[in-house]
Length: 364
Image (tube, rainbow, N blue to C red; front, top):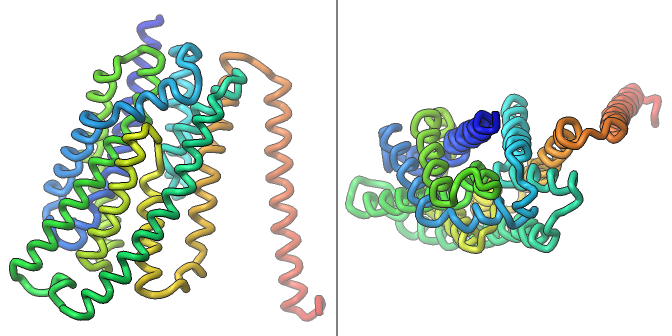
């Protein structure tokens, strides 16, 4: 029975790893694919797969240690709790994908681990605060760097059309190689940081050794990118074709570099949000700060808050349902949830009535 439960935990982790590759990792080559630096989809995905695997194998160990033993005591991690952590992260991401809401894999996984720690009233708060501070600081750094580079790139491209990648000469080919290198760097960083989300709890529970977990986690993230990442690559490639080669290189390079630095310190960070804020910084340098009026920043803040809190709630609830039954607590949580939904519904109804009154002139 124990052996079967262990295999279930490993199976969920590897399935999670494949989904990480299909969603987050595959996006790293979007700029190169969209710009035509690499024209074949399978070639782009193959580069992603190689970059992700190398990143995990060569530098994923520190983040694995953090998720396996840096947030809650490793002695707390039984096979059942590992399954709950992985299920909470997977179900949260799956539900968000169905709703079309982009959540951060790293934040969801950290939230699931913290939820288990709260259920047993033992969390390494100091380490958690360091992680959360990176989540706040890195997007700001990414925005600032991209905004500064955006101004430099804008001047270069205005002075000389070759910087925009126009023409077929060696200069354009050099820019395309730069884009490829930046995309590979981003894929490498995804391997260093995100593979730990799938295998960190397994390693912490002693179900897999660190090197074994990194190898299999990296392999399945790479396979996920290669087999399932085509649609994400296509979508991101089309979205980013408006960017010049230099802009794409700066964004991918900034995101990849910041994530690699975080990985060396063992900090799981949200690559997607870092890249998004870098794109926002580049856009602000090009078009001014009117981009901020589109609610992008508010969306980023919502994702930043919802990702860890939702998975934390799910894992805490699963522990209190199946491992440490606390029916009264579950009743209170359900009551609070229903109350919040009811309040939101009442607020929306009130706002709709006020708008209707103002449109009819009765409210003036």
